[in-house]
Length: 114
Length: 158
Image (cartoon, rainbow over all chains, first blue to last red; front, side, top):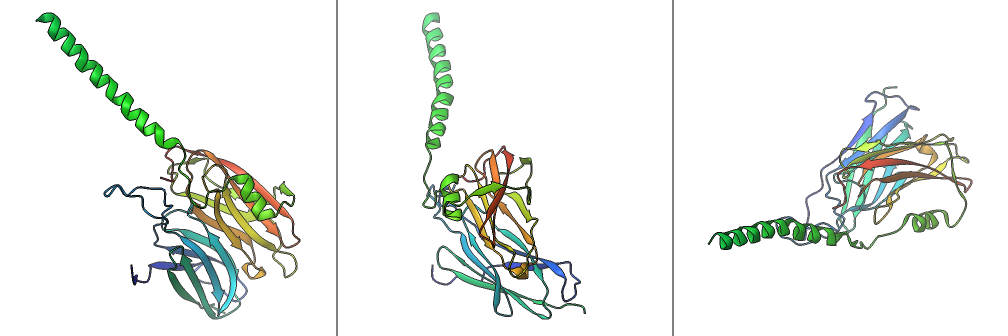
């Protein structure tokens, strides 16, 4: 497999309205099979190779504030949620890789209603 | 003729009766556990995370999981640590583990004071009824945990 399409993912900030200094919830959801490498493809009978997200970095304006090591035991189309204290206007970026070396990135602007 | 037919029908019945047993035997065989490359037992995972340091149960670790998982492939887990998140005193990491999956590890979350709360949530796979454990590493180097049992009717690892 040469190139893959950028994966579909979403960053959700809760609540939708917040001010600088507020603690918000940052949810990251991504479409990914999270195959454990133990399951057979029902059509081909072949074991589906392990294919799962293994590392995630959450940054604000380029500065990492949370990193995660993820294992194949996380559910398909995984969901990850952390809190974050809004420093001001800026951009949250989620960079993630999977065990095949695939790299992806998703960003969302933080727009506090100060 | 009657006897022949009787024996024939008996053989047919026993053949039919035998088949489900054979199928069951085949399905039982795979339970001889398949090994994954990341397989790690709970004790080994704890040792890897804590480096052998003391790990205490603490009610500062609030773990929210369903009592019964409708679907073992998607079990929601929330961990909240009742501990400050200040520059020199914060929750450094939250680890989510199971106790009986081949690879017990699920996610290792390295937090910073910018997170403002020792909180993490995700959804994990559970192969069978077992405990989910939330393990926190505090910035002073101590480790605390809490575990809760989740009943799983349909296993989620495949």
